[in-house]
Length: 116
Length: 475
Image (cartoon, rainbow over all chains, first blue to last red; front, side, top):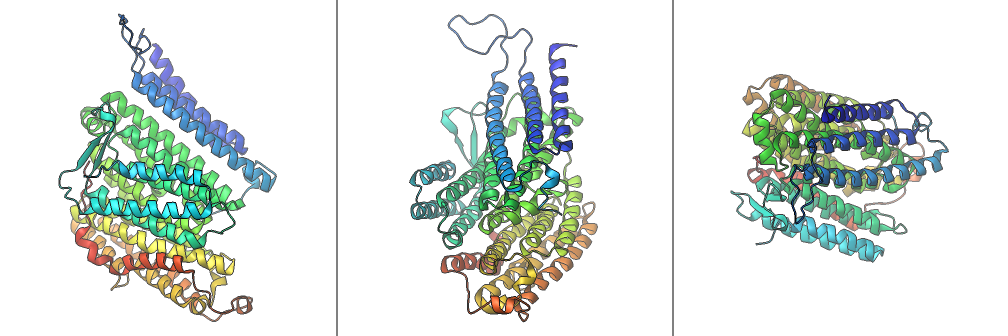
């Protein structure tokens, strides 16, 4: 397999692992970790899109690099996506903390105030 | 000419200024002034000649490298709807929010939500859309939790987890689109996807619709809606049900008809809409709490709009947009009044409101008018929009159109029965503990009454706006 193929497969696996744990875990902290793993998979996928074999970092210098450069746009997207992921995780953990204070548990089975 | 970018800059600046002011009175006035400014701006753009969309290039970098904002007739109309309902909701919050709470944060996040809404409408860059969409989502999570009760934290976390999964799917779709087009501008992506392999385009479109459909509350991914909309403070429920889901819906459709025009999304979306109508109205029928009933009803109403917008005819799109405007008015009235019912009685169940219509005569009448319009009773706006949807469906000859008409009529019957049940409770004799709990007149406070009255005007006289409602969903 080529390098991008390996990266695509691992990105896909990371997303699957993340979503699986989000669906099966009852511990809310673990659910958020699952979300973060899936986030990582998406970020890896985005970086891989811009991957160029033997490409150099996309920085312009006085003596321009001879070889090809990787695409900088997906990297900029990933930077934004990481920041958004950080914000969402912080908010989610705050909510879990407040739920723990009021219910004394972080198990979703014990926090069932709202139902269908 | 005023630049459309002011729609994003003004509320964003005001939001951070509000946090700096950090005094209740100051925050209230600042929020009101901002919403007034935005309404004036939106009115200016609504009256302007937009037969060719006005574009702005950010930071002097031409697209596809730079980000393009574009104001067309549809954006101008929705911007007017958003800014006016924002203004009325802020007016309502003046008396609804408890004065001992720190209100500046509440107004700041609300303004942030408005800035993101305008951003979603105006942007023509797919990644920029994602960023504004995230701001919209995160500010809604915060606003849902802002009452700081057990139920609101739980609803907010549920909403956050589902919403984040949606944004993940959306980001993958954006990545796939970038991979084939090498650009993030919507027009470039549309061109590249048209030439790409059809299964590739299908995958991209499906991931995008699934991701953004979560905020638009499209049927299989709308389970967060009843919890979030009923646990939020009522002013926020009115915002979320009134324009946030509708906005996501319109933008989603605009993107599926332009960027993903090579993929036929309309048929599956139409069936998802019908399932949404059935599930929403049936679930609303079985609820005992007023706000949950209204939240489920929003689920059904979104299905109705989606059905009309996906019929594929000009008449269908026009009818869907008209119904959207009607729903914003009617659902805002119902949620805002439900908020005062909860403030006055301290209870959420419909049965505790018996006899309340006599204690709050004006409020009761406004509630009944909005409920009648939502059901579609003749002289009101809701009748015209529902009638237009049905006739557009009959004339379109689209697959599933007649099934859709049957489902809509069934939904209307269910809707009428649960809304009339609420109205009957309001005017029945007070029972049990309500007899002594309810003493004297307890009308809503003046700012809230004025705000609700504003929305009611839209519900009653909205039919005169019909010729002004634009239908184009072009890029």
